[in-house]
Amino acid sequence: MASIEKRVSEAILAVIRARRTAPSARSDSPVGSSIRSARVREAQLSDYKAVTELKTRWGLIPDSFENWERLWIHNPASQQMQPSRPIGWVLEAERKVVGYLGNIPSLYRFGDKTLTAVTGSGLVVEPAFRAVSMSLIAAYYRQKDVDLYLTTTAIEAVGKVARAFKSDPLPQEDYETVLFWVLRPYAFARALMRKLQVKPAFSYVFSGLISAAMATDKIARRRKPTGSAKSLEVCEIGVPEIGDEFGELWLEKLTEGTRLLADRTGATLRWHFETPGDRGTTRVLCCRQKGRLVGYLVIRDDPGQLSGLRRSLIADILVRQDDPEILKALMVRAYEHAQYAGSHILEVLGFPGNVRRVCSQWNPYRRKYPACPFYYKARDPALHKVLASSGAWYASPYDGDATLMPFLDGTTGDAENFPRETTTLQTVYASALDSRSDGKI
Image: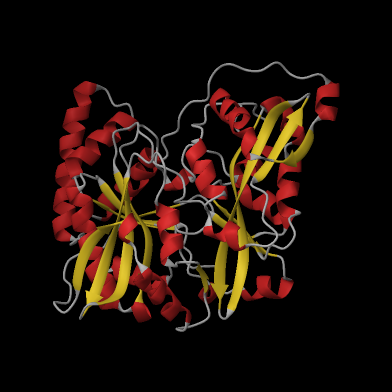
C-alpha cells in the first residue's frame, strides 16, 4: 500500500495546484519616462475601483468593496492600533494605478505582551512596471510601530528574496507538510483524471482502479478519525453564534505557556470568519465538558474547484491544555462534517506537534510544499531570536491572510496559493527572480 500512498500524495499536489490562466492581452510597454514617474503612495478606500480594474485586467479575482470595509474599517485590530496602519500602497504612473499591495493588521499575544502584526496581501503589478515593483515591498517593511511582519504563501523562490528583507522561515516543525484524508475515493479519482486531462476512454477505467485501491487502502490502514470520549459533547454552530466563552478559552490558553497566539476573542473570531461574498461555508465545532467550552475547531468547506475537487480545511483549533481526547473528539466530528458537506478531501495545514500527532494516528496521506509557506520578521532583534524556536509558535491557517479571503465558485481554494485568487507579498519576491512578463506579480 506504500506505493499507493506515494502516488496519491503526488497526485493530490497536482490537483490542488490548479491555476487559472492569465489573460493573453498585454499592455504596451511604457516609455522610460513613465517608469521614472512611477511613485508609491498609501492606498485609500477610494482606490477600490482602480485596484479592481487592475486585478481584473491581469486575471485575478478582485475583492468586493464590502470586504475592503471589513478588512480595514471593521477590523478589531485596526480599531485598537495607534497610530492606525495604512490599508496598503498603490504604485502610480501618469495618474494611473499600475500596482497594489494590501496591508492587513492583526494583534498577537506572546506571554503578557500584546504585539502588533501586519500581513501583505493581494499584490498585483502591471508587468511593464515590474522593475519598480519592489518599492511596494520596501514600503511594507518600512512601516513603523509594527512588531511582526508576516507572510503566508507557498512560493518556492520566496526564501531567497524574503531573507533580503531579513525575514526567516517559520521554525514550527512540519508546517510545510499537509495532512489529508480522501473522503470520496471515486469522486476524488474522477477529479484527478480531469486535472491530468486523461482521455475519456481511459478516465473511467483508471478512476475505478484508483478508487478501488484507495478504498482498500483506507480500510487496511484505518485512514479515518474514529473514537472519542463519551464525556465530551461536540455540537456545531455558525460563526455569528461565537460568544464570549471563546475569548475566555483563549485567555486561559495564554496562561498555559509562552507561545505566539493570534487574537481569538469572540469579536475577532466572528470578524475573521464572517466574509462577505463567501460562496463556501464556515462552521464552528464546539467541544464541551459538563457544559463548559473546552475546545473548538473551525472548518471551511469550499464550493468546488475548477477540477471538480471539493475540499474541507481545518482553519483553526484551540483546545484546553492541548488535551488529546478533546482534539480527537473535534477531529472525528470534523471528518463527519466534511463527509456530510460533500467534500472529497479533508486537510490539516500547520498547527504545532501535539495537534499533528493526534491527527497522525489515523494515518492521513501527506504532501509537502516545495518550500516553507510561512515567513516572519520581528522588528526587535531580541524577539526575532526568541521566535526562532519551534516551541514559540502556534501557527495555522488562522494566521496571516490565509483564511481571510472568500471562497468563490470555480476558484482553486488552494492552500498552496493563499490567499485565494490573489497574489500575496511573496509572489513579487518570486517574480523578482523570474523574467517572465505574465501580468501577475
